[in-house]
Each structure stands twice: as C-alpha cells, then as structure tokens.
Image (cartoon, rainbow, N blue to C red; front, top):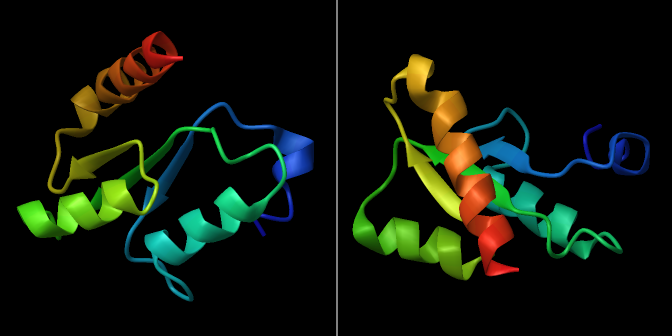
Length: 91
C-alpha cells in the first residue's frame, strides 16, 4: 500500500522497520528504489538486528542510515532530523 501511495504522498524520507508482516525492510526498500524518481530519497531502516555485518548489508543495499532497536522514542524525532540534515548536506 505504501508503494502504491508514493505519487500521492511524495515523501521526503522513508522510515522502514526490518520486520514487517509480509515483506522485510530490505525488500520494501528495493521496491521503493525501483520507482521512478525515488532512487535518491533517504531510507532509514529500524532493526534489532544490528551486528556490524548486518548494518553494512543494509547500507550496501541502499539504506541511508540504520536506527537500532531498542531506541529512546523521545529521541527518535531528533535522530531522524539529524539523518535528514546529514543527507541534505551530502547532496
């Protein structure tokens, strides 16, 4: 549903959980990246599986950043803003 609504929502950043009911975050990220004009949108993955080799796999797979669970929900917004600002500075 999120992929089908891309044209209507035009997100500036996509936040994906790795563990979702039907597909995982890597598969969803690949589907987003296949959409015309969405290959450069920052995608942040949230996961409890954050061994160094796993984080490398996520970044190599196209993630802009990885947020490790558990995280402090009070700091999540600030973390996402920082990721956005870092991404924006790189462009």
